[in-house]
Length: 613
Image (cartoon, rainbow, N blue to C red; front, side, top):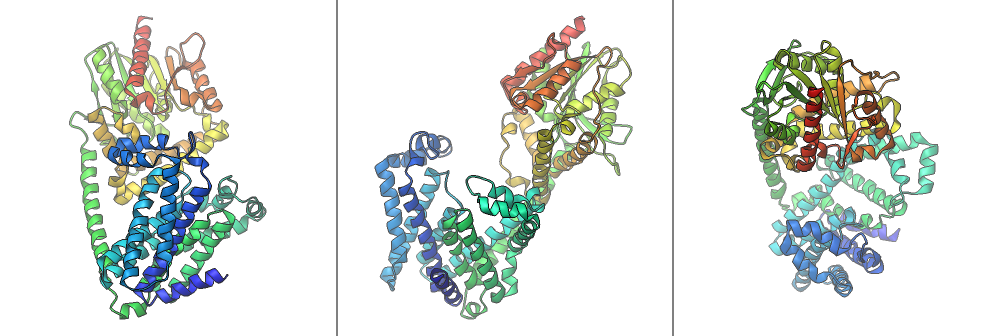
């Protein structure tokens, strides 16, 4: 309790003095850094061969992105060097904590803060696992404190304190906003889930929450409100700010006891002296410089404007689509954008993509089909994706996507031409229904590429849970992209594997909200129509042969393997009634050049065999 009284006293004093605020913040961060290094010195196992922080393993990714930095850090790849590193870090932390005053001591603290900042960055690269948010918080404080002291004046100190204040308030606010996007947090069951884990859990707390679910829901709701509303401290005044800080400190103390995150107490406490200083009316009256938040606000406004302009330009390019695409208006009023090659071959293959995907995913397969010069082929974007437009005011059902595909096949297939429909994932259910909807004899073959089985969500708890995870993930992604933040998303690994022209268009759609809106609409239809007590039954179609191709990763799940086998036994032409399995994931069946090449060969073999039959 004495420790917390001292922390509280330091925070109150910091509200009126920039030097005290800076000293309090850097001192609390120094405790965090020193404790982290003491823990590292006492637990040497995680740096050994094959352990989590084995440098020989960690340096691989860094060597690819920053080879010079990796070579420099190689010098620390020894037990002795690592001990010296953490001993120096502890010594610098102690130097910050020393109580001396005057220019000499300010210079010592400047050097110590700068050293802790550099060593903190190095430690982030060398110990990626086992760290936590307190390490990042301490690094932020040391860097800001070093820059503030290096400026040598009151304005630079105020700028540093404003940076730490904004960083601290945002860390709480963003944490709350992100939690709100997660289904377990909104449903009030996330905390008990954490308490069940081995790393951060606590059996006693988990049992209490299990017995009292209302208590957990109330605690979760309170946490979400507290974190999400934290930015209000800047408009509510110093009393409210002090209350928020008190709750935050109690929260971190509880995490330290229950979850073993003891350094969180010190690491995040380091933000609060700066928050107290910047929300204090008294410090504003003492010539506090508020230039940094004004500059930050101007930069933010400029960034928002540029992001909005970029989002508008991207939307226009998405709606225009690549120049090689054509358009077809369906009976529903949808406008489908499609591409492909039609040279009058005996068979035409229509390729239908998955949820949250565009026709660009078939880039490798269409390239291989084109080079084969033995079949015609068509790819298209379903209504709402890419340059395709959805019929206005239409309440979407799976049957609507089927009706559009039927119209596309009817319009593009030549009279007497054999039609083969190939669908990936959800596209498999679309082609199955389209084959039933088209006239008898119109479809010669079906190719199911890791396809959805209509009963998999109704009859498998794991598949149903997977569907919920997809829904939660797409909601978060859709919210980010629709907010215009698509430009900040990382380059998706699946897109990087596509041929260049397709990759550019695929990424453009990935960063645009239309794809996520269309996918969300289709996902709701899947949940409504397939996750039901009596899902649609699959049955063989007279005169329609089938090929079922599955990914090994999919087949590793017993339930998924059972449903893939059901498709194969119903539609497959293989003698054993089993799917063709490739060493692939759900995505790499299409996006990996070598695997997609083998998949294309299977499709062509299937087409030629059925042509000869």
